[in-house]
Length: 273
Image (cartoon, rainbow, N blue to C red; front, side, top):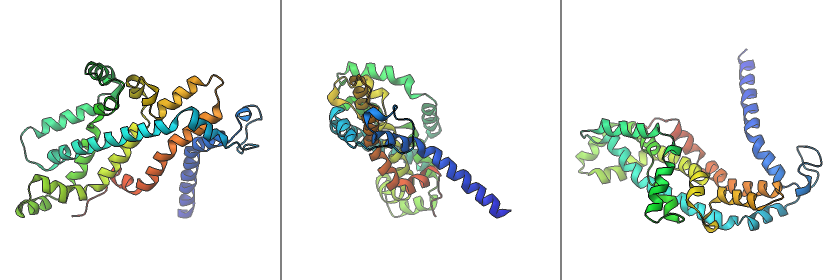
C-alpha cells in the first residue's frame, strides 16, 4: 500500500511538472518553427522543419541587446538599493530593542496589503514632476526599498538566537559590525531568496516601464517585445516566441543557480544555533 501511495505521489508530481513546463516547451517549439508554418501545417509537438533565423530576427528587429542591457542595469540597481535599505530595516525590526518597533512593523505589513497598481499614478506624477521621466533613475528609484523584503528578512533574522547577539555585544561589536559579521551571513538564505524574487519581479515588470520609458532606447525586455509586436504588422509569432525565449533565459539560469538558497529562504529554514 505504501508503494502504491508513493507511486501515486510521484505520478501527480510528474504530471504537475509536465503541465508547468509545457508552455515553455511550446514557446521553444514556436521559436524554432518557420514563420509561415506556425498555424498552417497543423499542430504537432515537433515542428516539421526548423528555422533558427527567428532568434537572429528577434534580436535585431526588437533591439533585444539594448533592452537586455537596460533591463540588467535597472534590475541590478534596484536589487542593490533594496538590499542596502531592507537589510538594516529588517535587522532593526528583528533584533534591536527600541520603542515604536511594533508600529513600524505594522506599517510594513500594511504596505504589503496595498496593491502595487494603486500607487503607480501618484508615483508617476512625482517622478514626472522632478524631471526623471524617461530616464534610468526614474525606472529605479520608486523601487529602492521593498516592504516584502523587509518582512521576509525580518522573519529570517528572528530565527537567529539572541545568545549570538548577546555574545557579539559582549565582544564589543556595534550594530554595524554585528549586522555585517553575524546577522548577514546567517540570514544568507533569506537574502538570496529575496534577491531572486526581486530580480524576477523587476526583470519581468511591464507596467512601470510602459508608463515611464517614452524612448525606445530605454525599453526593458518585456517592453521591447511589446514594441516589436506592435511594429510587426504581420504578427511574426515565431520571432516573438524566439524573443520571449531570449528574454526568459537569463532568469531561468539565475533560478537554476540559486534554487537551493531560494527554497531555503522562502521555506523559512531554521538557522542553526
